[in-house]
Image (cartoon, rainbow, N blue to C red; front, side, top):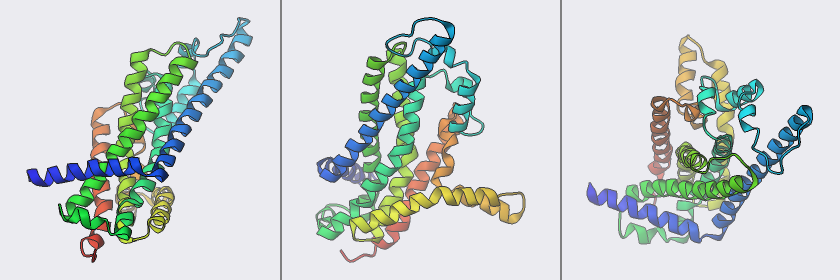
Length: 302
């Protein structure tokens, strides 16, 4: 068992290193960080515009950097309702808003962008090595199950690296372009939201790895995995319409549990029990999705 765990770990480290050396992934990572920078800039400009309007109404001069009126905005009922809609039903918004608003906003952007990054990265992982036959070098050292689970764990490392890099850039921008952001509280909020976003996105890596094991073409696997991810919210909406108290409605509810996108609201919960359940569910779904591909990969002639 110890040898199995060690093999999974070293494959995960190998996966992170291989991704870091791939120019295409570097471009995707650059686009992700650029998206986070753009989102932070948009947040700052939106807050500045709101503060300028409020200053004109009150007849006081506006500040050069926004953030001075943050406490006033956090009591705004429209903002509370808006955050409630983004976080999902049942979220304790007042408790959620105890975190810096920038941290919550960046967490939302990370959860929106990271699934695309991991789907792209994971769907080309095994397919690329099968196509080039380099997978044989790994097979000389360990088994196929260890390779698959190691690559899944490696995708989690990739997610953590991407979110931490994005969070560091956003923290620096938030401290430079705004006032009133407590440095430690903002850093802790960004770290927590980065961890939540990484776990939330892991099932999408499982989908990418499943496609990568089924289809030997990296681009073909990316198209299939991307199509599945795109169809998932549509399927979740359809199942939500069909859910109810009858047999078919209960089956629709049960089927919805196997869709990763339905866990969005639970990842925003301030109840650690609810979040912990959502995190375990994401890990299970990632393994389940991966297993669909492993059923083919385990028998493939490499």
